[in-house]
Image (cartoon, rainbow, N blue to C red; front, side, top):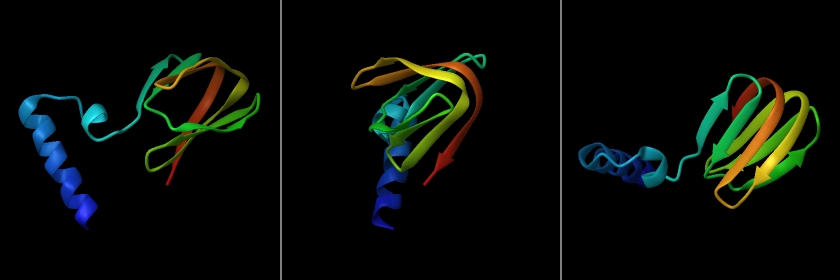
Length: 93
């Protein structure tokens, strides 16, 4: 309950000051380039890595990228870039 109230307050501050919510609320920012590449900013690390699926830890759960010939092109503390033929992306809490 307390965390929900804090998140609502942060959202209101974000709206009032026009600060992006992903920064203020520590949320991942996910950008697609067709079905060939996905960029995940503000991640918490790799959980599983295979050519048909990659699972990435995010703030409140897991992001699973499924596809064919998936590779991690770049991984730095702020961003992961995954390429290949992306079939789906699922969120798990």
